[in-house]
Image (cartoon, rainbow, N blue to C red; front, side, top):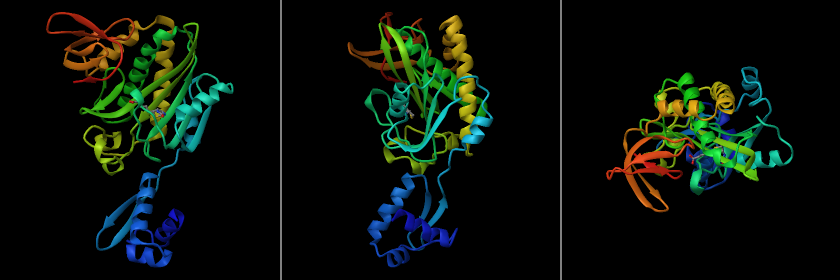
Length: 321
Ligand code: BTN
C-alpha cells in the first residue's frame, strides 16, 4: 500500500494530494492513509500536511553513496571493507555475526535504518531511514579487556574532531561519550566486546550520529534532549564526508593510542569535554554522588571531588550536569 500511495504522489510532483482522493483511488479509509503516511515518514519520507489541501511529498529518504564514500577514504585499514544495508535490526548485531565469520579489523557496517537500534544501558536508539549515520566498526586491538573504556573515550574524541571539521557547530563531549550541542545529544557511542583470558578478542564500536534529522523526525519525548547536526547548523550535511573524516581521525588516534597508551588521548578528551570543572550528579551502585568533575584517571574513570573533600572515581553510568 505504501508503494501505491507513493505512486500517487509521483504522478503530480510538488502538488497536494487530498486524503479524499487517496481514499477514493486506493479504496482505503482516511485513518488507514494517515497510518501509511506515518509509516512512510518513519522510513525517511517527509510530507507536509494541510487540513484543507491534503498531503504534499517534500522529500524522499537519502541513500548512502558508497562509491563516493570509498573514493574519498584516506584510511589504510578502517572502512576499507563496508557492508551497507537498507534496513537492519541493529548494525551491532550484524557486525558481531560478520566477526564470527571472519571479518577483519576495520570492517564497517552501515545501515540506512535500524529497527532495533540499541543504546547504552539497555536503551533504544532512534534510527530513522536516510537521516543519520548508524554504523558499527570492527576493531581487534591487542589490549586487556579492562582498557575498553579508554577506547570509548578515544572514539568520542575522534567523533568530536570529525564533526568539528565537517560542520559549523560547537560540539562537546559529556562523560563518558555523549556528544552534545547546546546541551542536547547529537551522537552516542556503544562499545561491545568479546574477550578471552582478560584479552580483548574484538570490539564492535557502534556509533550513532543524528546527522540530518529534522525536528519532526524525533518522537515528542526526545525533542527536548536530542538534536541533529542539520538542526544545529541550519544545513544538511554530507554523511559520506563525515564518515570519511571520522574514520581518518579514529585511525590516527588509534595508532597513537596503541603506540603511546591512553595519556595523549586523555588530554584530547579533557580539552573537548563539557563535563569537567562543573558540578555533576550521578547514581552509582553505592548511591548518589554529587561534586565537581575534576578529570579522568588512567583508566578513563571520571574523578569527582565531593563537597566533603573526598575524591571519588566514577567508572560507568550517566551523569547529570
Ligand atoms: C548511546 O548513546 O546510548 C549509544 C548509542 C549507540 C547507537 C549506535 S547506532 C549504530 C550502532 N547500532 C546500534 O544498535 N547501536 C549503535
